[in-house]
Length: 85
Image 1 (cartoon, helix red, strand yellow):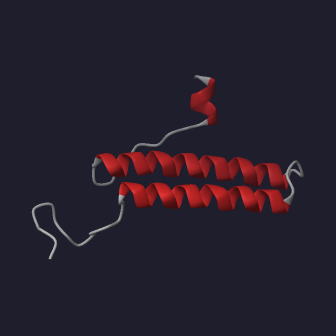
Image 2 (cartoon, rainbow, N blue to C red):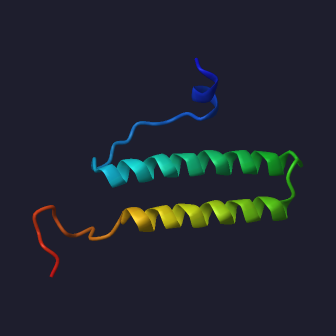
């Protein structure tokens, strides 16, 4: 097993297959992995709670920005062939 595969595992995507959904899913998995590392560092005393909070807040803002740019979750009730009204 490769070191990167062990440290940064990826799960399959089971949702609606669209390029923007796949990219956002990859971003979301990376976000979750980084949050886990930050929590572990804070729990072990290697990172202060304030630093952990600021890092998580920054990662959350990045994830929200990526979601906004990819337009994931917009027009949830509109099917592929429908035009916006």
